[in-house]
Length: 251
Length: 207
Image 1 (cartoon, rainbow over the protein chains, first blue to last red):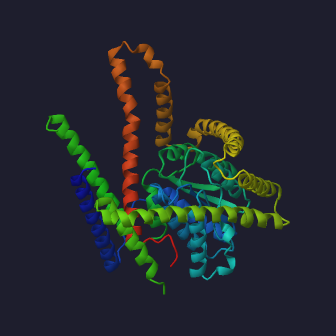
Image 2 (image 1 turned 135 degrees about the vertical axis):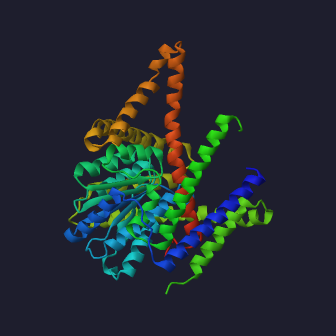
Image 3 (image 1 turned 180 degrees about the horizontal axis):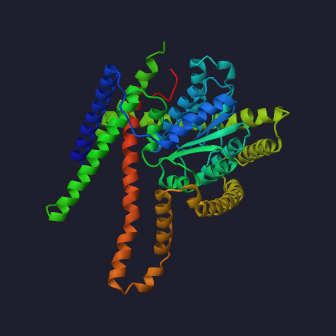
């Protein structure tokens, strides 16, 4: 990249950061949450978690294969945040959620997240380190390891969220065939296509990044979604203007 | 109350790494490179800990639990010990005999799993319209069939017909446009997630 591109990138980054902080602070001050469109899968997940608390079943969160030192790490962070929210929602249950992952760091962070949730919700006696486990170190072994958890009779809800490949189709298919509620979201195009074919209501595209905000409304998360919407509008506008200019021969 | 020390360290490290990307300064590079190296080493150690936890924590515990099935856990522990022992005896993972052994076991297993996956996905595709009873599901199904036909190369038989050639060529670009649209959304989400972690509002670690 040239220096000009770098400078433009840096300026944009600073503007986006300040817009995020401004919207977050404004929302904190006014106390008004913005209204977002309804996402059926996330509403279903909320209901399923409530039901699992009532009937004493367990929620399984598959966190994917993303390593935190790779570009796909953002989906790992979203999956960890989702695990935290699901853990907090399950705090009244005797069966805390169980997390499986395909990366060592992610596995340790999932344990850490579950431990922190248990500490905050005063349910440390229910915390077991085995609930945040490494399922396998390659994408396929991760899926095979996670299948054991999906097949666990106690598990009635499976949340597949993070970076997966087409192999995640095995997980989602088994989960659907078992009759468990399956919520699936990924940043990978292959996994999204697979989920679309195997899950009733998959989350597509950037909906993955909306899951934590929809599960628990926080000013910073809401502001983040708002900024995403603004940026998307900006990108659409730029594409349209670019296409028109190209059409009339200016570009 | 949570200690602010960890978020402060995370913020400073994040800023240095990010600044090193945007500002090509030798000082920043000198600070950034060892930090990234440490991250990779820490990631490797974490991987090792997670593997030991999986083997001796999860499967070891399952072996001790009389109510849970033991067979698979026993096989996992046995194969892990055998693999580690052979690796140590043959002095490391770069040994060609060791590499050959592991590859010749792992490759057929993963290949057969991919075969199972292919059948599973083909079956799921056939049941797609049962599952997605809406116009999106219908469009997805038709699109899959259409692009399977286009990519099969059957239209190359009619490459002499200019209109058809142009139409097929234009249609082949359509999935790329859709993929780019989805990727733009994912990129925006990634950007915002990164910023939230950098400013310390999202903390994937306990402090």
